[in-house]
Image (cartoon, helix red, strand yellow):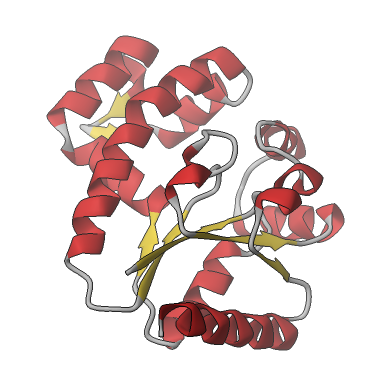
Length: 195
């Protein structure tokens, strides 16, 4: 089984691309969703996050995402410490999940594969990219974040120029029909590698 990493900056359309792969029958592991689940369900993770960020990190026993985002996206050191707590748990969870899949390849969708160094753990890497104005438009439409908060999150990620040389496949996600075609071509290329 081939492990494929799917990444891209905030607002690039990773989840849309992952959805197209899912339509082709490819198992998708959404790192952000699983991280939130683990951060809410794992006693050890909860304890470590509260030790790092204080009791306000949880509200009514649930992750306080707004509070955490305010704290970590304006403080790179704190963000790194949080990532050092959460990413190993997500990595282990992904491997457990992947072993249960029956597919030639699986995809792990994750925002910061390059930034946290985990890109080396994949057989192939897919980068989803889009121009910054389009990304900003998408984020404003889906989130209630301020422009300042969005910019802080973007600045915490590498820019595409840094990611391109490390990627095996690049999807330019502007026109959805073209994006779907690119996904289908990559799917066929990945299946060729396996057969």
